[in-house]
Image 1 (tube, rainbow, N blue to C red):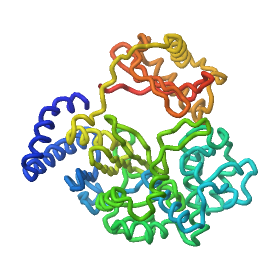
Image 2: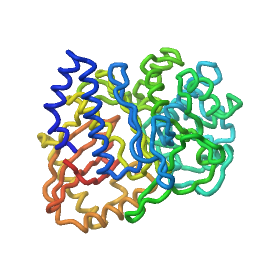
Image 3: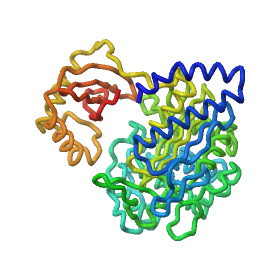
Image 4: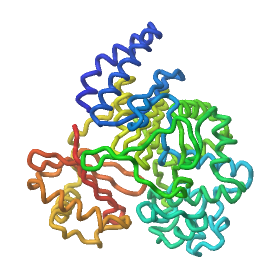
Length: 470
């Protein structure tokens, strides 16, 4: 991918210059370059259908569908095709919450036991803000629910009551769908109606999102896309889940690329809510230590090329979504795909680099290793992963699935590879209170990206191995 992006850099620079002198001609050329890239990437990823929207300096450069919304009926994707939001819907749940805040029904500092009086007493320190920023400590329910069972709001809440707290509220950040399920229930309770009705009246309608809505399996919904997955090389329909799992605040919406382009204009104008509410939404959360974590209310708060980048992704039931706003470059990109195996961020990154080569993700190259003792320890940890001898005492805040699923997977993967070469440090970051180390490791002809996070006391909080694609 990066090789392709590097090969078009000179062309993209030329296009930027041309745009300055001849806007109409350059705009057409830029659109053609993006269109060519999207078609090639769609083919490479084997995505049945997707919709792409690109806005540059307030002008829509591209709003287009590719491939099929429904393979069985051969229905093409259009600008009006509805895709499931996945977790991209979280920023809308946050909007519903903030509307209630502005109406005086909720305070960000409210303990959530105000809305769940039968909740465990250990929940009292958890506030609405903690839920919005994934700092509540409540374990993520993903993978734990019975997806074939219908749950009421009360049953969802009681299911979450039984989940352990992974850390005290505000101590750390850990992505938790549980928190946004609870936020949806809170809005339902204080507004006296479903949170999607709140969104319809107070967000979708004023933003001009004419077809955005909650998911319903029963309703006749024009332009609804089907979701797909690949099983042993064969494309299959998405797996069925109970209707109630598509009513929750963690991401249960339909929208089109036209809807999200309208939403992008509302975000750019900071409309619908007050400036103070938008400031809350788009500010990184502060942990108890005072360190900041790059997440607001349903938005990742990042940087690219020294400028702000606000974005989020989603994935659910055969759909993958991504929405990125490169603030300093006045560039917004929306990608909606109907394949669980797709990677919409690859489309986003490719398009961003075409518009402005300075936005290309920089390649991972070796940096000075100033902590050889850490590298030596993580070399040992990698060999322990291969041997299946990693010790839980060395880890902190590992998710419930790590030891039962991830560790056996990594052991099998490593045992299938040649012995590891030396760890080559390519990135060292501080995220929240954690130190995150990224290495490239050669295993014979194969290179893996090895990422480990360490908390201040030195224990491991994250361990990941991924194939490295230069």
